[in-house]
Each structure stands twice: as C-alpha cells, then as structure tokens.
Image (tube, rainbow, N blue to C red; front, side):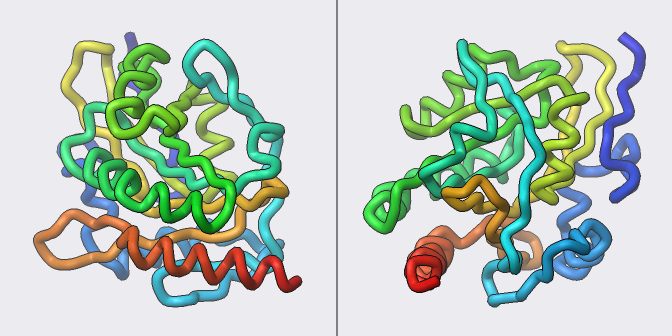
Length: 226
C-alpha cells in the first residue's frame, strides 16, 4: 500500500518521527491549532475548562461504521453525546481517557440522557470487531465507530477534532496524532462545546472528568432555561 499522508495537514503539519502527541505538548500550541479551525458561523466562548459554541454548530450529514450497524446524525437526537477521537493502539491518552470517562459515566447519566462515543482515526487497523471489543472493555454501553478517511476526515473537521497519520500497511507499528479534547453534541445534533485537556509538563494531556461532569451539569441547566 502506498504511503498514506493523512489528512489534516491543512491545519497541522505531520512529519514522520514525531511523537504521537507532539501536537498537543503545550497548551499554547493547541490553542493556535484550534484558533485556525474555529468556525466563523459560531462564536467561541472560553468558559475555563471548556469552550462553548454560541450558537451551537450545525453538523453536516455523516455516516460512520459502528459494529455491525452504522452511526449517523439521527442517532445523535434526543441525547447529549460526548465524542473523543483516538485509536486502539494508543499507549496512553485513549485508555486513560476512557477509564476516567467510565468513572463519571453514571454521574453524567444522572444529569441527562447521554452517550459516549469513541471514534477511531485508524480504520486501517481498527476494524469493527476490534473496535467493539476495545470500547466494550471500558463499558458495554460505550459506542465505537470509524470510517474510511474520505468520510472520517469531514466528520473530524466538522467537530474541530484534528487527527493525522502516516501509515504504510496494517501490520506496521505507527502512531496516530489526534486531539485530546472531547466534543459535546447536544440533543439537537449540534456541536455545543469542547472540553479541554489539562496540560502539565511531563504529563499526558487528559480532560479532567470531574470538571467535565460539573460543567456538563451547568450546561444542561442553562440549556433548560433557554
């Protein structure tokens, strides 16, 4: 298979030999990336641990593969959806994020109907069976989804969650660069917020799940008042 240079180079340069999370090593660097892809149709309000889109950003039509079925816009309606990008071979950010998400999952469900979705940016290695087994290890209710890059790239772009990969073949041990932020989609199927990872020198950037749960409670309460 020819070398695949994917896909977000228009936002972030991806070069062979970079560490998996070199994009996200500093808070300033992440902010520069996110400023470049901020949509003009929505203003972005920095709320501290998360960014709020005002108004919520309309998502384009999409279809992802999820197990033996598909996942599309219709399945976002009626629930709040937390979306994170990653891949099953991820050594640190993904398993840590999913483990901590499991820890607050019941708390989130007590606030409002929710679903947690893990989107693999590595469809070359993450087939439906592997992805289902991976997310199921953390919680059977978590949704695993992916797609070929021609469908996955527009979805990631729409959610403002960039990723990049350089791969030759399925068996190759390669890294995938991806955002550590978590997107929140509201029950109308629109991008409502981004929860930002905490950046400490020498530590893997991870979203603080307790802060996320508290902020989600505030978001739901304010939404109910509008």
